[in-house]
Each structure stands twice: as C-alpha cells, then as structure tokens.
Length: 221
Image 1 (cartoon, rainbow, N blue to C red):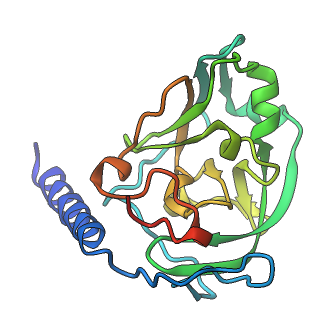
Image 2 (image 1 turned 120 degrees about the horizontal axis):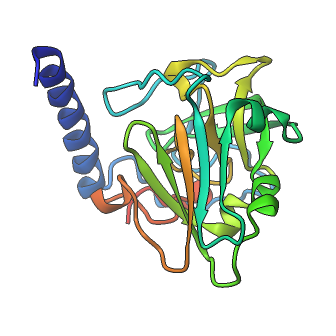
C-alpha cells in the first residue's frame, strides 16, 4: 500500500468511526412525531440550499466507457447494461426532495434518469424477491425493501438540474430513493441485487436503521 492509499484508508476509518459513534449515541434524534401530510421537513432536519458532499473518503472515477449496471439475483432476466444501453431506456424526469441522515434536507432537486420500475420490468423479479441490495463501485452496499426500490419516484439518475451528475455526487449514475434517508441512495451504482431475505448493508451493520424512513426518524437501529 502506498502513502496515498494509507492516508485514504485512515480518513475513511475516521469517518466510519464517527458515524458509528453517532449511532451509539442516538445523535440528532428528536423523538418528535411527524405529519408528512402537512409538513415538508422531516423531524430533526434543516433545509440547505447547497448539496453537501458525503462519501467514505473516496470517489471512484468511472468513465461511461467502462460503466456497467448489473441487475441480478432473483430475476428471470438478468441484465448487464453498458452506458449506451442504459441511456437508450425510457428516460424520466422528476423533482424530489432529499433528506440526509446528518440532518440536512434539500428541496426541489430535478433529476433525469431511468425509473427503477422500468429496470425491474425488464429483469422480471421472481415472486420470492422481497429485498434489494444496491452495490457501488466504491464497495458500498445498502439494503432496502423491493417495494421502496420500486416506488414511483425512485430512479437511477445520470443528471441533476439538467447537467450530468458529477463524480462527487455519485456520477455517472446513482440510485435516488427519495422516500428514505439518502444513505439508501447508493452512489456510483454498479449492481442491483434482488434477494428473498434481507441483507443489511455497509451502514446498516454499523448501527444505522434497517429501513431509514425520515418521517419516522429512523436514523439508527
């Protein structure tokens, strides 16, 4: 391991240690009941105008020329899409809010990408499929119920505010599941794996909540 790799590893471990401590301490929890039918801001959140950058201390460089998205596991038709095939799929544009577990919320983000429902329609999940694990090019994983991944507003996005998604925010493509805290929206997505049984991901095994509903303030498990 060279010096740069060692420094990156140390930074990553400090970030992980800090977030695990937050989970143990229940940091940011308010215990307040929310009213998503009349309130836009979930409990404990604050609105920001910028888009903060959060990662594990590394930002993989994945050019579109070698980008691939695999959809496999409990599906009838496993997929492996290159960039051209991904961009040839029907494109959706949605405006959604995003809520980070670190207590910031950003309103009215305009996304362009492929609806997760369209991907699933091509892959044809088997009846026993109930969960999804999203994998990133940085080794990150996160789990969520298939029903949440297949929500009407869930996308695999390649553009934000009309411009290509930048590397720091997970470009060239990332998951966006607005109904859940944003750690569930894996950056630099490389694989969507369908499972019968739940399999907690990177943060979920480190004290974060298994579902992550911001309106229920499910920050930690």
